[in-house]
Amino acid sequence: MILKIVQAGDPVLRKPAEPLAPELIRSTSVQHLIELMRDTMRDAPGVGLAAPQVGEPIRLVVIEDRPEYTKEIPAERLSERERTPVPFHVLINPALTALDGEPVSFFEGCLSLTGLLALTPRARSVRVEAVDERGEPVSIAASGWYARILQHEIDHLDGRLYVDRMVPRTLMTQANYARHWQDASIAAVCADLGCTLPD
Image (cartoon, rainbow, N blue to C red; front, side, top):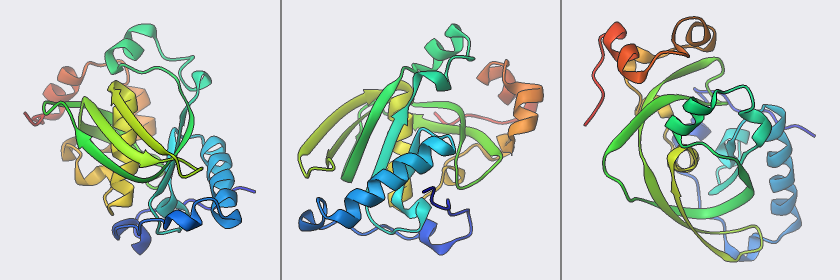
């Protein structure tokens, strides 16, 4: 079964999610939700999905960046974005710390803002402390695109969307991104659109 992905404007996306009680993590209902979120993320397709995006206000995310998602992307663009496959995993009650204070900007979209994307600055590297679907502690040090995914999904748990962090003049449809900008450098995009990236 595929869950409905909540779109921007729904209040659940703007409220901080509640921590998931340790005694509930291994419950049938939470384990079933994780399975449904995995299937929904893959069906979209997306690289991450937070529980509020399916209407559940709890601190739970699923993440997976599958190799087939990048097979059409040139190697130099994957290298620039530091993007490599990430296996499926679950993070519950995550806490994120930015390790590299200098922001890196790339185009970012969201399953809850269908058809749009924008340049969004994020920390290049982060550390995340959480528990997994078995309630076991997890510590992740991530950089590049994986760090971006983690920041994006954990933002959802805090009631934030990428549009809160984006460079406003770069908001565009996916169709116009593909038509005009996908092969341009970030510097060229900003020069043409008259925007300044944060330091």
